Length: 481
Figure 1: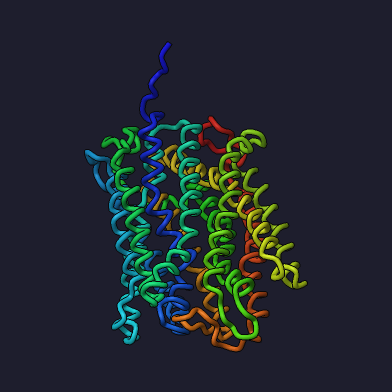
Figure 2: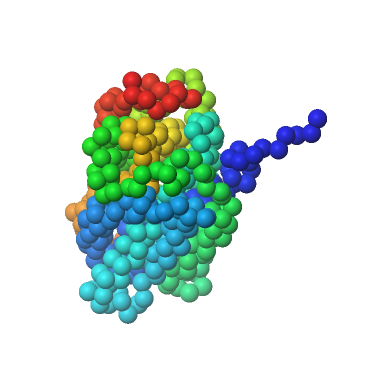
């Protein structure tokens, strides 16, 4: 007998399209979480002013988000049924707007850099533009329209996770590319900008065809018979949807593990393994190589954990139990990492550091599929409780968490840099402050990337103990216990 052709939503086209469409959000998010502050302080030629601008911009951005994200979610849910699918339409807008925002944010003109008021305006405008685009990414809502099959949902999210790992490995070459371009033009600011535009172009080439390949489902979540969504319904999500309440704060706390883990990693590897402690001179070639090696070493455990997470979920029984396992693993490794730093062992061996970060990454990757599946559970739960899915609102609010976490981690690092008097020559990348401050600076960096994740991991365990669907197994409906 011939092979049976799979039909929507189990067909290859749907799986490939929904996966590829997430490329822009993955790459754009990585630029903000991993390189926003280090670009401003080390590559844009702004000096210490880069560390002072970031907190202001990020604070304004979060105030903007607090009002804007719920409104954007309401707008998505309020939008009438569209031929191409309203969630597809908004994801398409998200891709285009995010590309423009990131490209502008990392391409500050020389004339703007010398005018502080215009510099603030430029960075704020493009940061908020990216912010706007990120909020429109209704990925969870789109997947939810494809039916309630938990196995299929998990596979779609697993595919996205595998793509994120692959793109993360490719993203690890960013500083290598920056250094290669800079060898020809001798301007790190322009080199970083050219590299950013290159990555944005690649993300567009993958994301745009992907979203156009996807067919939005025609479940009750998008049929016209569903009652119109009002502003008060957005408030009801917070007030009545207990699954959303717990998961919102759980993710807010749990995802700080990854944001803090990566917030100072680039700084630590640069100043622990690539600097001459007597002169402050940086070996930029070694830095590029170590950065790429660190990212790959982290991506491999995330790839493995993403692949085995459905099997772990099946074995131990629920999404929440998988999260607890990952959180306790994070706590133990985080504390060990800090102890090794205080004893002077960690900075003697890049291999030890990379292994420890790899184990933390394994725990983080183990959380991905359960966490994403729980967002869709929240949409199901809301529809059962109120008759309205509110998929756009819940998707927008989930995006708000990621942006808030990236902002807070950047603020913490910025405060650390200001506290220690961090000064770097943006032309050479060398340290121009007191080199005696480098060793204690490394302690602060490890505190951020290891101890804070350990603390937030324990906080997540406490929060998720209150999740109303914590004993729900794959295939169950999203009912209260």
